[in-house]
Amino acid sequence: MSLGVTSRSLRGISAAVALISVGAVGCSEALDSAEAGAKKVVRQRSVFSLATGDCYNPNNAAPKSEELSVEVVPCKEPHKGQVVGDFKIDGHSAYPGEDKTAQIADERCPAEAQKFAPDAWALPKGVDVYYYSPTKESWATGDRAVSCTYTKEAGTFSGSLKSKPLNADQLAYLKGSNAVYEALWTNQPEAEHVEDDFAGYKKQAKAVTAALGTHLTALKNIEQPETVKLRARLEETAAAWEKAASAGDTDAFYLAYDRAFAGIDPGKTVAARKELKLATTVPADEAEVWAG
Image (tube, rainbow, N blue to C red; front, side, top):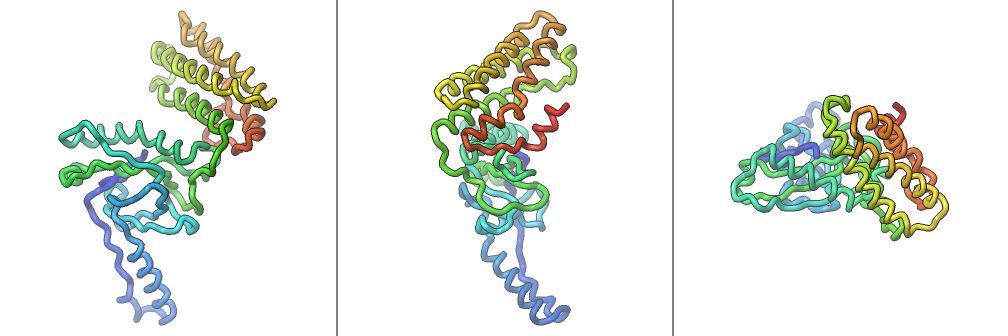
């Protein structure tokens, strides 16, 4: 199977205990090295048997895109990734191809990750959605599983990312908020300028309008004061997105879009998040986008 950014490969990784170097180092260092190596060997697990919740370190000996085994470690120890969900690829008798497999994983893994850890603001910096998915070779052996992970490409993190139990208000807020930003980014046109893809930008605005409608419905049942204020602001924001979606020309679109985009600035949700006892530090990449 192969490792992808949001794979799993048939190419195995061997972990050897470095006992052959005893003569080159002191006895104590050699024993420590041997013990560490032995622990790593014992912890090896096939990527085909990873379970949701497992914390792990990839084996450095293999190319990033090809792994058969990883080192599964206690989550309290530093590690690079944690399995946050899995599913099987159905509806394909033959291997669908690398691109199609990646597309399926890209579409489904973010949802699995959100179920495991609904509040992305609470994640360690640099953690993103990756996955292990079948290759052509592993598919031929019956492999259909995709293991979705949260992985830190540079450095490690400690502790499980599994969310603590959330109350009804917290879950309602996060479900709606996540949907709004997902609608924004998954519908982002490739063209940088509205004039180059007016229809695409209007489609994005329509998707965000619909997501905001769902978000507002959920917020209606939350009566805490800061969340009530946020809902009032988002009602105005939703109206701006709706105007952008129905704009007759690019000038009208820009007028509505500037107000609409500013209205979903994540920084404006901090007070409501604090009130709901959710994470309140805006992720650096989001803060950068709205900082201009």
